[in-house]
Image (cartoon, rainbow, N blue to C red; front, top):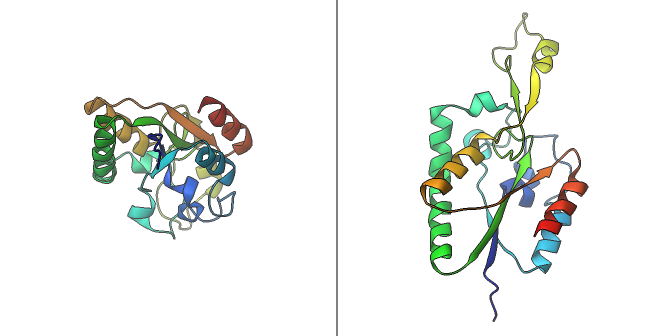
Length: 183
């Protein structure tokens, strides 16, 4: 059997939307409009672990980058990514093409071009709680999510280069088309 030796890394939720925070899924199981054409192009895949799911489980609240930007969560990400880095080194040393990594913009973990931040995203829900003030503090910023920052740093440390692509969940069809043109 012929191997074309092309591999892509994908954020966990692209293959398994069930790993996302409840009520933000916008497709049934996997992002078929992206995955099916990539399979047809002959790509193999490495599904990145979801650091949020593996920290907080399925019944978690939505978070912002500041909540994950801690030494503890960054160490958690490094631990999850170490076997991924080892795989990439092995594949690269054996002449495989690591064609890129596809993340999910807006995610505090897996954002590529932008993520979400909020200065008031903390505290206790009590009589002083103001949902309006908290939601008004939410901002989109042009930064990677924490998991992707850690991943990028580990790639640099190991002299590995990857191109990064992003699903924009506000307009997934356009972002899928752009990614498929690039790959």
